[in-house]
Image (cartoon, rainbow, N blue to C red; front, side, top):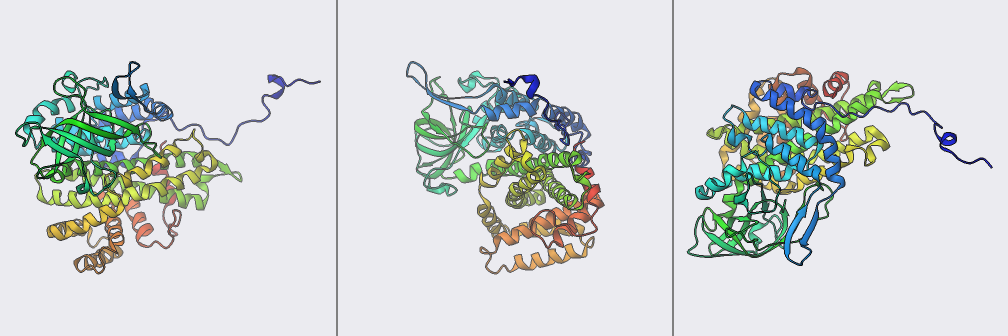
Length: 549
């Protein structure tokens, strides 16, 4: 009887017509559109090259490890003491350490160069492409700075640690650490987005008032990054919903009354822990005035929403890179896929969506770099909501189309595309879903009429450059000045604003290939799926531009 031996069974076929893995590569140096957009910031180029190298080399493998080895909740130690600790794989700490040391949570608050928000957005764009879960605590630490600045006594103690560029994951009091991270706990079971329905109560431990300690009792349905050193929390005080900074450890060196009930079993964002928590007379400092909690925390929310836009743009960029790389090598019927007309149409369409998402994200970042410019701040306020709706909404379908380019190879866990696909929905859900953004835009236009003028001033920067864009802008203006059934039609109106803004921004960028292709591909669009660009677009040039090689 013939026995099956390794020599008898091995080598039954030859592996061919398979692309080499895309990694390792430099995510910045191989990204033409990102390099063009950042070219005015010569001081940032070395930082971005360095971080692009890290992202395309060390972070690729660390990202897989951090998502294959999920956070583990330990409510008690072996002696029965309550510890409420979340343990992470070393790869998670590796990613956090590198990001903090390179200034992802702190760059705009600690660097005086021009364009620091743009540079930081570019670094977040690189980081998100390979591991998005760690971006949650990085974003919240960054975004908490303006909120804490409203309480100078707390800011003096906390901000130097939040911007120190030192990562210390040890579970110990915040004032014993060289650097800290900050999370957020806003929503409750009965309210969700409607935070005014929160029932968590805050009682002053002394006289009360701004900067004073309160005891918080209640629950939070979602607490983001529960191993953070402090959390911005909303709770009901005597004068209404108020904002508090609640540390994991109390000022006397004892554990605070923050108890983790369980970790959420999420679709994506799995390397990052999200938790349900209970507060039992947990100590927290009031930030700002009682009853002004939403006003206090809204600056943090605005910045986290901005990072959602950047994160979605990043996921799309990596999806395009993977799809173009695969199709540049894979042959069907003896012909490389990138040379086949229908695949050219799909890849070029995906590349256009990615370019437009990046352009939108960096334009909002530029407005963040102008805190004293009223025009830019009005633009930032409304454009953030538009981008949060549109860019984040486009990402899941975009990534799914990229998966199709790989076929079955894009539907297995060895591919990063599965992680990108699972990650994509969180950016459209977290910090206010699509309807919330659209209704927020309508409220802003009503309460701040100047914001409408700012929007159309921005759009009219390219007036006369394209007849069809001019017509779309005119129609939008008519719809928004006298909106009929505004709430029912809100998504349609916001979609029109988003596409026109993207078209205008691409025209302003000066790249005729990308701008003209986007105008024809979006304003002349007939088909709803990707891969329905009209005849005559230079697809091969767009694909070459998007290639990570």
